[in-house]
Length: 330
Image: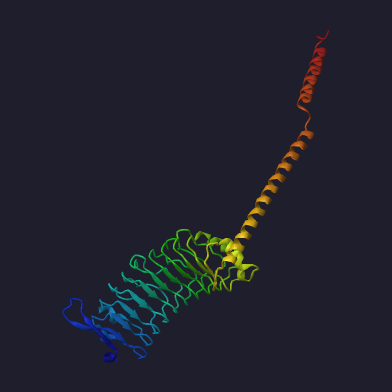
């Protein structure tokens, strides 16, 4: 197996010798890879479709750039830090957490099809080069822990996500897949996500266009997928979305046509005019009500000069009575 798997002869790091830098051993029922410890010049290793539970023998492969260990029996992604490792795929194993992934140059990480319930174990301090993160097909209920500043592509389809948290630091994110989750609200998006262009929300629980309106904070959003949400069954669904998000270039599987955009713009203008008329009418009604209240108040109160005369007359009569009682009246 070892001899068959080695290939790609290349110069070693110092340029003074040659060594095999690629090893591939798929579908071999491997349970032990300790023999690879000696092949320190390996850069590309594919051990998919085996029965591996332990990757510790790879700790000596300090020149490793690319590693694929899909469909094994791994319960953890924890490995010795490898200084040049840029791509890892742990897809379809039995991994339950994200602890121990600390490779400083890692740009592409796949944990698809595992049993991960939270991403809070990912090391933000060491994964500062991460650009693509694949977590579809896990058991996530939240996006907490995914706040990587250089992340460009984030794949979270087929989880159980109910809330969007910790997205404010994703200033370079361009693609976000959230298909087949349990989202009913779209709180969590923010204007700091200024590069997001593609958003897939297919087959969630978005029922209100008020939730869709929350996507207005995304200044660069061009493609939005909302198929199989309750709101996509509403009358004039496409027009309603375009009224809220007029800069979209593609909605679901179809490009936005010029006629469609013009119709949405006309609908928006009509609604704006109706709102202005409604606001003006409400203002007039309030003014009429105010005048009516003033009129009723005036009718209920005696005139000011009449009240003054009554007070003056009452005081004179009282004074005369007092004078008569004291025998001073003339």
